[in-house]
Length: 93
Length: 445
Image (cartoon, rainbow over the protein chains, first blue to last red):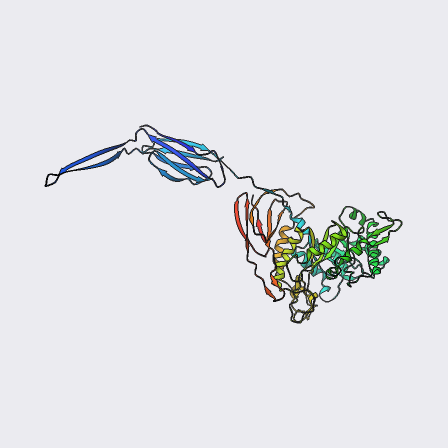
Protein backbone atom coordinates (compact mmCIF):
# COMPACT_ATOMS: atom_id res chain seq x y z
CA UNK A 1 0.00 0.00 0.00
CA UNK A 2 1.33 3.47 -0.88
CA UNK A 3 1.48 6.53 1.33
CA UNK A 4 -0.94 9.29 0.51
CA UNK A 5 0.34 12.50 -1.00
CA UNK A 6 -0.47 15.96 0.25
CA UNK A 7 0.64 19.39 -0.87
CA UNK A 8 -0.52 22.27 1.34
CA UNK A 9 -0.08 25.91 0.49
CA UNK A 10 -1.02 29.08 2.39
CA UNK A 11 -2.06 32.05 0.33
CA UNK A 12 0.46 34.24 2.20
CA UNK A 13 3.34 33.82 4.58
CA UNK A 14 2.56 36.88 6.70
CA UNK A 15 -0.80 38.05 7.90
CA UNK A 16 -2.11 41.00 9.83
CA UNK A 17 -4.25 40.43 12.87
CA UNK A 18 -7.81 39.78 11.81
CA UNK A 19 -6.98 38.89 8.24
CA UNK A 20 -8.48 35.74 6.64
CA UNK A 21 -5.90 33.00 6.03
CA UNK A 22 -6.58 30.51 3.19
CA UNK A 23 -4.98 27.05 3.19
CA UNK A 24 -5.27 24.86 0.09
CA UNK A 25 -4.49 21.15 0.44
CA UNK A 26 -4.17 19.01 -2.66
CA UNK A 27 -4.15 15.34 -1.79
CA UNK A 28 -4.19 11.93 -3.42
CA UNK A 29 -3.42 8.28 -2.78
CA UNK A 30 -2.15 5.74 -5.33
CA UNK A 31 -4.39 3.09 -3.82
CA UNK A 32 -7.41 5.24 -4.07
CA UNK A 33 -9.20 5.11 -7.34
CA UNK A 34 -12.50 6.28 -8.66
CA UNK A 35 -14.16 4.67 -11.68
CA UNK A 36 -17.17 6.02 -13.44
CA UNK A 37 -19.29 3.50 -15.37
CA UNK A 38 -22.22 4.01 -17.68
CA UNK A 39 -25.06 1.52 -17.70
CA UNK A 40 -27.44 1.58 -20.61
CA UNK A 41 -30.82 -0.14 -20.33
CA UNK A 42 -32.77 -0.71 -23.50
CA UNK A 43 -36.41 -1.82 -23.65
CA UNK A 44 -39.43 -1.94 -25.93
CA UNK A 45 -43.06 -1.18 -25.08
CA UNK A 46 -46.17 -3.11 -26.15
CA UNK A 47 -46.39 -1.14 -29.37
CA UNK A 48 -42.78 -1.95 -30.19
CA UNK A 49 -41.39 1.49 -29.43
CA UNK A 50 -37.85 1.37 -28.10
CA UNK A 51 -36.85 3.11 -24.82
CA UNK A 52 -33.27 3.74 -23.70
CA UNK A 53 -32.18 4.84 -20.21
CA UNK A 54 -28.53 5.70 -19.47
CA UNK A 55 -27.24 5.87 -15.87
CA UNK A 56 -23.74 6.94 -14.74
CA UNK A 57 -22.34 5.13 -11.73
CA UNK A 58 -19.23 6.00 -9.69
CA UNK A 59 -17.28 3.39 -7.86
CA UNK A 60 -14.31 4.13 -5.61
CA UNK A 61 -11.94 2.12 -3.52
CA UNK A 62 -12.20 2.31 0.27
CA UNK A 63 -8.68 3.71 0.66
CA UNK A 64 -9.59 7.45 0.94
CA UNK A 65 -7.34 10.14 2.50
CA UNK A 66 -8.36 11.62 5.84
CA UNK A 67 -6.98 15.15 6.42
CA UNK A 68 -6.40 16.60 9.89
CA UNK A 69 -5.03 20.02 10.75
CA UNK A 70 -3.38 21.07 14.01
CA UNK A 71 -2.35 24.69 14.56
CA UNK A 72 0.30 25.45 17.18
CA UNK A 73 -1.32 28.79 18.00
CA UNK A 74 -4.68 27.21 18.64
CA UNK A 75 -6.32 28.80 15.64
CA UNK A 76 -9.37 27.00 14.36
CA UNK A 77 -9.24 26.04 10.68
CA UNK A 78 -12.61 25.57 9.03
CA UNK A 79 -13.06 23.45 5.91
CA UNK A 80 -14.80 25.50 3.25
CA UNK A 81 -14.82 22.90 0.45
CA UNK A 82 -13.48 19.47 -0.49
CA UNK A 83 -13.86 17.82 -3.91
CA UNK A 84 -11.95 14.65 -3.09
CA UNK A 85 -8.60 15.92 -4.26
CA UNK A 86 -8.49 19.53 -3.03
CA UNK A 87 -9.65 20.86 0.29
CA UNK A 88 -9.84 24.56 1.15
CA UNK A 89 -9.56 25.70 4.77
CA UNK A 90 -9.71 29.17 6.28
CA UNK A 91 -8.78 30.69 9.63
CA UNK A 92 -8.57 34.18 11.10
CA UNK A 93 -5.10 35.56 11.76
CA UNK B 1 6.07 31.73 14.84
CA UNK B 2 2.91 29.67 14.63
CA UNK B 3 2.70 26.66 12.36
CA UNK B 4 -0.03 24.46 11.01
CA UNK B 5 0.55 20.72 10.65
CA UNK B 6 -1.47 18.95 7.94
CA UNK B 7 -1.71 15.18 8.18
CA UNK B 8 -3.05 12.97 5.43
CA UNK B 9 -3.85 9.38 6.44
CA UNK B 10 -5.35 6.56 4.49
CA UNK B 11 -7.52 3.73 5.78
CA UNK B 12 -4.60 1.47 6.45
CA UNK B 13 -2.77 3.96 8.61
CA UNK B 14 -0.29 5.19 6.12
CA UNK B 15 0.18 8.88 6.68
CA UNK B 16 2.17 11.88 5.60
CA UNK B 17 2.63 15.24 7.28
CA UNK B 18 3.43 18.70 6.10
CA UNK B 19 4.17 21.68 8.32
CA UNK B 20 3.68 25.25 7.18
CA UNK B 21 5.03 28.15 9.21
CA UNK B 22 3.40 31.53 9.04
CA UNK B 23 3.47 34.79 10.95
CA UNK B 24 0.84 37.15 12.24
CA UNK B 25 1.80 40.71 12.88
CA UNK B 26 -0.06 43.32 14.89
CA UNK B 27 -0.27 46.49 12.87
CA UNK B 28 1.99 49.01 14.54
CA UNK B 29 -0.20 50.97 16.92
CA UNK B 30 0.20 54.63 17.52
CA UNK B 31 2.50 55.11 20.48
CA UNK B 32 0.86 57.28 23.09
CA UNK B 33 2.76 58.69 26.04
CA UNK B 34 0.95 58.53 29.37
CA UNK B 35 1.62 60.87 32.24
CA UNK B 36 2.82 59.63 35.59
CA UNK B 37 -0.21 58.81 37.70
CA UNK B 38 1.40 60.45 40.73
CA UNK B 39 1.50 63.79 38.94
CA UNK B 40 -2.29 63.66 38.64
CA UNK B 41 -2.52 62.57 42.26
CA UNK B 42 -0.32 65.41 43.48
CA UNK B 43 -2.24 67.93 41.43
CA UNK B 44 -5.37 67.55 43.55
CA UNK B 45 -5.79 68.87 47.08
CA UNK B 46 -8.53 69.94 49.45
CA UNK B 47 -9.18 72.97 51.63
CA UNK B 48 -9.59 72.70 55.36
CA UNK B 49 -9.15 74.95 58.39
CA UNK B 50 -6.48 74.06 60.90
CA UNK B 51 -6.88 77.59 62.24
CA UNK B 52 -10.47 76.97 63.31
CA UNK B 53 -10.33 75.70 66.85
CA UNK B 54 -13.90 75.00 67.91
CA UNK B 55 -17.09 73.22 66.84
CA UNK B 56 -16.28 70.46 64.33
CA UNK B 57 -12.78 71.87 63.82
CA UNK B 58 -11.68 70.92 67.31
CA UNK B 59 -11.14 67.46 65.78
CA UNK B 60 -8.10 68.21 63.66
CA UNK B 61 -6.68 64.71 63.96
CA UNK B 62 -9.87 63.16 62.66
CA UNK B 63 -10.16 65.73 59.90
CA UNK B 64 -6.66 65.06 58.64
CA UNK B 65 -7.31 61.34 58.96
CA UNK B 66 -10.36 61.73 56.73
CA UNK B 67 -8.25 63.57 54.14
CA UNK B 68 -5.52 60.93 54.30
CA UNK B 69 -7.99 58.06 54.22
CA UNK B 70 -9.53 59.48 51.05
CA UNK B 71 -6.08 59.47 49.52
CA UNK B 72 -5.78 63.22 49.05
CA UNK B 73 -2.18 64.34 48.80
CA UNK B 74 -2.38 67.75 50.42
CA UNK B 75 -4.63 70.27 52.10
CA UNK B 76 -4.79 74.06 51.97
CA UNK B 77 -5.11 75.86 55.24
CA UNK B 78 -3.88 78.83 57.22
CA UNK B 79 -0.68 78.04 59.11
CA UNK B 80 -1.41 79.77 62.43
CA UNK B 81 1.51 78.93 64.68
CA UNK B 82 -0.04 80.65 67.67
CA UNK B 83 -3.11 78.43 67.77
CA UNK B 84 -3.20 75.16 69.67
CA UNK B 85 -4.62 73.07 66.85
CA UNK B 86 -1.77 74.06 64.57
CA UNK B 87 0.63 71.72 66.36
CA UNK B 88 -1.93 68.93 66.32
CA UNK B 89 -2.34 69.40 62.60
CA UNK B 90 1.43 69.38 62.01
CA UNK B 91 1.88 66.15 63.89
CA UNK B 92 -1.06 64.39 62.27
CA UNK B 93 -0.22 65.53 58.77
CA UNK B 94 3.33 64.30 59.20
CA UNK B 95 2.14 60.97 60.58
CA UNK B 96 -0.28 60.48 57.70
CA UNK B 97 1.96 61.75 54.91
CA UNK B 98 -0.30 64.64 53.95
CA UNK B 99 1.33 67.83 52.65
CA UNK B 100 0.31 71.42 53.36
CA UNK B 101 -0.44 74.32 51.01
CA UNK B 102 -0.30 77.17 53.50
CA UNK B 103 -1.56 80.67 53.81
CA UNK B 104 0.28 82.56 56.52
CA UNK B 105 -1.03 86.11 56.68
CA UNK B 106 -3.88 88.55 56.33
CA UNK B 107 -4.03 92.16 55.20
CA UNK B 108 -3.57 93.13 58.85
CA UNK B 109 -0.43 91.05 59.46
CA UNK B 110 2.63 93.04 60.48
CA UNK B 111 6.13 92.35 59.28
CA UNK B 112 7.07 90.98 62.71
CA UNK B 113 4.14 88.61 62.69
CA UNK B 114 4.98 87.36 59.23
CA UNK B 115 8.64 86.86 60.12
CA UNK B 116 7.74 85.01 63.30
CA UNK B 117 5.29 82.77 61.49
CA UNK B 118 7.68 81.93 58.65
CA UNK B 119 10.42 81.11 61.15
CA UNK B 120 8.04 78.88 63.08
CA UNK B 121 7.06 77.12 59.89
CA UNK B 122 10.72 76.63 59.00
CA UNK B 123 11.50 75.13 62.37
CA UNK B 124 8.41 72.97 62.70
CA UNK B 125 6.88 72.14 59.35
CA UNK B 126 9.45 72.61 56.60
CA UNK B 127 8.99 68.97 55.62
CA UNK B 128 5.23 69.39 55.27
CA UNK B 129 4.63 72.71 53.61
CA UNK B 130 4.98 72.51 49.85
CA UNK B 131 3.54 75.88 48.86
CA UNK B 132 2.81 79.26 50.32
CA UNK B 133 -0.09 81.38 49.22
CA UNK B 134 -0.34 85.14 49.60
CA UNK B 135 -3.27 86.83 51.25
CA UNK B 136 -6.59 85.06 50.75
CA UNK B 137 -8.97 87.11 48.59
CA UNK B 138 -7.64 90.59 49.35
CA UNK B 139 -9.89 92.09 46.66
CA UNK B 140 -12.88 92.07 48.92
CA UNK B 141 -14.45 95.01 47.19
CA UNK B 142 -14.96 95.48 43.50
CA UNK B 143 -12.96 98.69 43.61
CA UNK B 144 -9.56 97.87 45.01
CA UNK B 145 -7.87 100.96 46.46
CA UNK B 146 -4.28 101.58 45.42
CA UNK B 147 -3.24 101.66 49.06
CA UNK B 148 -4.73 98.20 49.50
CA UNK B 149 -2.81 96.88 46.53
CA UNK B 150 0.40 98.30 47.98
CA UNK B 151 -0.37 96.72 51.35
CA UNK B 152 -0.92 93.33 49.72
CA UNK B 153 2.30 93.46 47.70
CA UNK B 154 4.23 94.68 50.74
CA UNK B 155 3.11 91.65 52.74
CA UNK B 156 3.87 89.40 49.79
CA UNK B 157 7.36 90.82 49.81
CA UNK B 158 7.80 90.22 53.53
CA UNK B 159 6.58 86.62 53.20
CA UNK B 160 8.87 86.04 50.25
CA UNK B 161 11.85 87.73 51.88
CA UNK B 162 11.65 85.74 55.11
CA UNK B 163 11.30 82.49 53.18
CA UNK B 164 14.19 83.30 50.84
CA UNK B 165 16.50 84.36 53.65
CA UNK B 166 15.68 81.49 56.01
CA UNK B 167 18.48 78.94 56.14
CA UNK B 168 16.04 76.02 56.20
CA UNK B 169 13.53 77.29 53.66
CA UNK B 170 15.84 78.90 51.12
CA UNK B 171 17.32 75.58 49.87
CA UNK B 172 13.79 74.23 49.53
CA UNK B 173 12.72 77.30 47.59
CA UNK B 174 15.78 77.19 45.34
CA UNK B 175 15.08 73.56 44.45
CA UNK B 176 11.36 74.07 43.89
CA UNK B 177 10.32 71.97 46.87
CA UNK B 178 8.70 75.03 48.38
CA UNK B 179 7.08 77.52 46.05
CA UNK B 180 5.62 80.94 46.72
CA UNK B 181 2.29 81.82 45.19
CA UNK B 182 0.36 85.01 44.67
CA UNK B 183 -2.56 86.10 46.75
CA UNK B 184 -5.78 84.42 45.65
CA UNK B 185 -8.34 86.74 44.13
CA UNK B 186 -12.05 86.44 44.84
CA UNK B 187 -13.33 85.09 41.55
CA UNK B 188 -16.52 87.12 41.13
CA UNK B 189 -14.82 90.34 42.16
CA UNK B 190 -12.02 89.57 39.76
CA UNK B 191 -14.58 88.97 37.03
CA UNK B 192 -16.26 92.25 37.86
CA UNK B 193 -12.94 94.04 37.42
CA UNK B 194 -12.41 92.24 34.10
CA UNK B 195 -9.12 90.92 35.41
CA UNK B 196 -7.82 94.32 36.45
CA UNK B 197 -7.22 93.18 40.03
CA UNK B 198 -4.52 90.80 38.83
CA UNK B 199 -2.82 93.49 36.78
CA UNK B 200 -2.87 95.86 39.73
CA UNK B 201 -1.21 93.28 41.94
CA UNK B 202 1.28 92.06 39.35
CA UNK B 203 2.52 95.51 38.42
CA UNK B 204 2.60 97.18 41.83
CA UNK B 205 6.10 97.51 43.21
CA UNK B 206 7.61 97.83 46.66
CA UNK B 207 11.21 98.45 47.64
CA UNK B 208 13.44 95.47 48.28
CA UNK B 209 15.49 95.42 51.44
CA UNK B 210 19.13 96.36 51.07
CA UNK B 211 20.30 92.88 52.03
CA UNK B 212 17.83 90.99 49.85
CA UNK B 213 19.85 88.25 48.12
CA UNK B 214 17.57 88.08 45.08
CA UNK B 215 16.07 91.53 44.43
CA UNK B 216 17.14 95.13 44.55
CA UNK B 217 15.25 98.37 44.10
CA UNK B 218 11.62 98.16 43.07
CA UNK B 219 10.23 94.63 43.02
CA UNK B 220 6.81 93.83 41.61
CA UNK B 221 4.09 91.56 42.87
CA UNK B 222 4.63 89.42 39.81
CA UNK B 223 8.33 88.99 40.55
CA UNK B 224 7.51 87.82 44.07
CA UNK B 225 5.49 84.85 42.87
CA UNK B 226 6.39 81.44 41.51
CA UNK B 227 2.81 80.56 40.71
CA UNK B 228 -0.68 82.04 40.63
CA UNK B 229 -3.33 81.17 43.19
CA UNK B 230 -6.68 81.56 41.47
CA UNK B 231 -10.12 80.96 42.87
CA UNK B 232 -12.79 79.65 40.57
CA UNK B 233 -16.18 78.20 41.41
CA UNK B 234 -18.38 76.66 38.78
CA UNK B 235 -21.63 78.03 40.16
CA UNK B 236 -23.27 74.64 39.82
CA UNK B 237 -22.29 74.32 36.15
CA UNK B 238 -19.89 72.17 34.16
CA UNK B 239 -16.51 71.36 35.62
CA UNK B 240 -14.77 74.12 33.67
CA UNK B 241 -17.53 76.72 33.78
CA UNK B 242 -16.05 80.24 33.98
CA UNK B 243 -12.55 78.78 34.26
CA UNK B 244 -10.97 79.92 31.02
CA UNK B 245 -11.91 83.55 31.67
CA UNK B 246 -10.04 83.42 34.98
CA UNK B 247 -7.10 81.70 33.36
CA UNK B 248 -7.00 84.44 30.75
CA UNK B 249 -6.98 87.09 33.45
CA UNK B 250 -4.05 85.39 35.13
CA UNK B 251 -2.18 84.94 31.84
CA UNK B 252 -2.57 88.63 31.06
CA UNK B 253 -0.89 89.54 34.33
CA UNK B 254 1.58 86.70 34.85
CA UNK B 255 2.30 85.20 31.44
CA UNK B 256 2.90 81.46 31.55
CA UNK B 257 3.35 81.21 35.31
CA UNK B 258 1.75 78.00 36.65
CA UNK B 259 -1.80 78.43 37.95
CA UNK B 260 -3.35 76.62 40.88
CA UNK B 261 -7.04 77.01 41.57
CA UNK B 262 -6.70 76.97 45.33
CA UNK B 263 -10.47 77.01 45.72
CA UNK B 264 -12.93 75.30 43.39
CA UNK B 265 -15.98 73.14 43.77
CA UNK B 266 -19.68 72.82 44.44
CA UNK B 267 -21.94 73.61 47.36
CA UNK B 268 -24.77 71.29 48.36
CA UNK B 269 -26.80 74.01 50.07
CA UNK B 270 -30.11 72.96 48.54
CA UNK B 271 -32.18 74.46 51.35
CA UNK B 272 -35.25 76.47 50.33
CA UNK B 273 -34.07 79.63 52.06
CA UNK B 274 -30.46 79.53 51.07
CA UNK B 275 -28.28 82.58 50.98
CA UNK B 276 -27.75 84.12 47.57
CA UNK B 277 -24.37 83.05 46.24
CA UNK B 278 -23.16 80.04 44.30
CA UNK B 279 -25.89 77.95 42.74
CA UNK B 280 -26.02 74.64 44.62
CA UNK B 281 -26.21 71.11 43.30
CA UNK B 282 -27.32 67.92 45.07
CA UNK B 283 -24.66 65.64 46.50
CA UNK B 284 -25.31 63.12 43.73
CA UNK B 285 -24.32 65.77 41.18
CA UNK B 286 -21.27 67.17 42.97
CA UNK B 287 -20.15 63.57 43.42
CA UNK B 288 -19.76 63.32 39.65
CA UNK B 289 -18.23 66.74 39.17
CA UNK B 290 -15.76 66.23 42.03
CA UNK B 291 -14.12 63.35 40.20
CA UNK B 292 -14.07 65.27 36.95
CA UNK B 293 -12.14 68.05 38.72
CA UNK B 294 -9.24 65.65 39.38
CA UNK B 295 -8.66 65.06 35.68
CA UNK B 296 -10.06 68.09 33.91
CA UNK B 297 -7.91 70.57 35.81
CA UNK B 298 -4.84 68.37 35.32
CA UNK B 299 -5.52 68.18 31.59
CA UNK B 300 -5.73 71.96 31.48
CA UNK B 301 -2.36 72.13 33.33
CA UNK B 302 -4.07 73.75 36.30
CA UNK B 303 -3.72 72.73 39.92
CA UNK B 304 -6.99 72.03 41.73
CA UNK B 305 -7.76 72.34 45.42
CA UNK B 306 -11.32 71.44 46.16
CA UNK B 307 -13.28 73.49 48.64
CA UNK B 308 -13.54 71.80 51.15
CA UNK B 309 -13.09 68.84 53.51
CA UNK B 310 -15.93 69.22 55.98
CA UNK B 311 -19.31 70.96 56.00
CA UNK B 312 -19.58 73.70 58.60
CA UNK B 313 -22.40 73.09 61.07
CA UNK B 314 -25.55 74.39 59.38
CA UNK B 315 -28.52 72.99 61.29
CA UNK B 316 -31.75 72.63 59.45
CA UNK B 317 -32.21 72.65 55.72
CA UNK B 318 -28.72 73.47 54.45
CA UNK B 319 -29.40 77.09 53.67
CA UNK B 320 -25.91 78.49 54.17
CA UNK B 321 -24.04 78.19 50.89
CA UNK B 322 -20.60 78.61 52.44
CA UNK B 323 -21.25 75.78 54.91
CA UNK B 324 -22.09 72.98 52.51
CA UNK B 325 -19.08 72.51 50.24
CA UNK B 326 -17.76 69.62 52.33
CA UNK B 327 -16.56 66.20 51.33
CA UNK B 328 -17.96 65.11 54.71
CA UNK B 329 -21.08 66.22 56.55
CA UNK B 330 -22.25 66.02 60.12
CA UNK B 331 -25.16 63.75 60.92
CA UNK B 332 -26.39 66.08 63.65
CA UNK B 333 -25.41 69.63 62.88
CA UNK B 334 -26.95 70.79 66.16
CA UNK B 335 -24.22 68.90 67.93
CA UNK B 336 -20.89 69.92 66.38
CA UNK B 337 -18.98 68.50 69.34
CA UNK B 338 -20.20 64.96 68.65
CA UNK B 339 -17.39 62.43 68.12
CA UNK B 340 -16.42 62.29 64.43
CA UNK B 341 -16.34 58.50 64.37
CA UNK B 342 -20.11 58.45 64.51
CA UNK B 343 -21.06 62.04 63.72
CA UNK B 344 -19.27 62.52 60.40
CA UNK B 345 -20.40 60.81 57.24
CA UNK B 346 -19.00 60.75 53.77
CA UNK B 347 -21.00 62.28 50.94
CA UNK B 348 -21.53 59.86 48.03
CA UNK B 349 -18.59 61.12 45.99
CA UNK B 350 -15.97 60.13 48.52
CA UNK B 351 -15.83 56.38 47.98
CA UNK B 352 -15.35 56.53 44.19
CA UNK B 353 -12.89 59.40 44.60
CA UNK B 354 -10.91 57.28 47.05
CA UNK B 355 -10.78 54.43 44.53
CA UNK B 356 -9.38 56.75 41.88
CA UNK B 357 -6.82 58.43 44.11
CA UNK B 358 -5.58 55.17 45.55
CA UNK B 359 -4.89 53.89 42.04
CA UNK B 360 -3.15 57.08 41.01
CA UNK B 361 -0.95 57.21 44.09
CA UNK B 362 2.46 55.79 43.31
CA UNK B 363 5.71 55.58 45.21
CA UNK B 364 8.91 57.42 44.51
CA UNK B 365 9.85 60.96 43.67
CA UNK B 366 9.79 60.61 39.93
CA UNK B 367 9.02 58.22 37.12
CA UNK B 368 9.30 58.53 33.37
CA UNK B 369 6.29 56.84 31.77
CA UNK B 370 6.84 54.55 28.80
CA UNK B 371 4.84 54.86 25.57
CA UNK B 372 2.04 52.37 25.07
CA UNK B 373 0.56 51.07 21.85
CA UNK B 374 -2.82 52.70 21.77
CA UNK B 375 -4.98 54.10 19.05
CA UNK B 376 -8.12 56.07 19.63
CA UNK B 377 -10.07 54.73 16.68
CA UNK B 378 -13.00 57.01 17.26
CA UNK B 379 -14.30 59.16 20.04
CA UNK B 380 -17.39 61.21 20.74
CA UNK B 381 -16.46 64.87 20.84
CA UNK B 382 -17.66 65.25 24.45
CA UNK B 383 -15.29 62.64 25.88
CA UNK B 384 -12.35 64.01 27.84
CA UNK B 385 -9.63 61.62 28.96
CA UNK B 386 -6.32 61.32 30.77
CA UNK B 387 -3.84 58.54 30.03
CA UNK B 388 -1.85 57.66 33.15
CA UNK B 389 0.80 55.11 34.04
CA UNK B 390 2.25 53.85 37.29
CA UNK B 391 5.82 52.75 37.75
CA UNK B 392 4.73 49.11 37.60
CA UNK B 393 3.72 49.78 34.00
CA UNK B 394 0.00 49.58 34.65
CA UNK B 395 -1.62 52.05 32.28
CA UNK B 396 -5.12 53.44 32.41
CA UNK B 397 -7.31 55.88 30.62
CA UNK B 398 -9.64 57.83 32.86
CA UNK B 399 -12.44 59.23 30.74
CA UNK B 400 -15.71 61.03 31.23
CA UNK B 401 -18.37 62.65 29.12
CA UNK B 402 -18.03 66.37 29.60
CA UNK B 403 -21.10 68.51 30.03
CA UNK B 404 -23.60 70.11 32.37
CA UNK B 405 -25.55 67.56 34.39
CA UNK B 406 -27.64 69.86 36.56
CA UNK B 407 -29.94 72.65 35.49
CA UNK B 408 -29.50 75.33 38.14
CA UNK B 409 -32.64 77.16 37.04
CA UNK B 410 -35.11 74.28 37.04
CA UNK B 411 -33.09 72.39 39.66
CA UNK B 412 -33.43 69.18 37.72
CA UNK B 413 -30.78 66.77 36.44
CA UNK B 414 -29.68 66.97 32.83
CA UNK B 415 -29.25 63.45 31.57
CA UNK B 416 -26.11 62.93 29.53
CA UNK B 417 -26.31 59.45 28.08
CA UNK B 418 -23.05 57.51 27.72
CA UNK B 419 -21.27 57.92 24.40
CA UNK B 420 -18.70 55.69 22.79
CA UNK B 421 -14.96 55.68 22.56
CA UNK B 422 -13.31 52.99 20.45
CA UNK B 423 -9.80 52.03 21.47
CA UNK B 424 -7.30 49.69 19.87
CA UNK B 425 -4.55 48.37 22.08
CA UNK B 426 -2.20 45.39 21.84
CA UNK B 427 -5.00 42.94 22.43
CA UNK B 428 -7.53 44.29 20.01
CA UNK B 429 -10.25 46.82 19.60
CA UNK B 430 -12.93 47.72 22.12
CA UNK B 431 -15.82 50.12 22.08
CA UNK B 432 -16.62 51.47 25.52
CA UNK B 433 -19.51 53.64 26.60
CA UNK B 434 -18.51 56.61 28.75
CA UNK B 435 -20.89 58.85 30.68
CA UNK B 436 -20.33 61.79 33.03
CA UNK B 437 -18.98 59.52 35.78
CA UNK B 438 -15.22 59.17 35.44
CA UNK B 439 -14.52 55.71 34.03
CA UNK B 440 -11.29 53.75 34.39
CA UNK B 441 -10.23 51.83 31.27
CA UNK B 442 -7.22 49.54 31.58
CA UNK B 443 -4.89 49.65 28.58
CA UNK B 444 -3.68 46.15 27.70
CA UNK B 445 -0.22 45.24 26.53
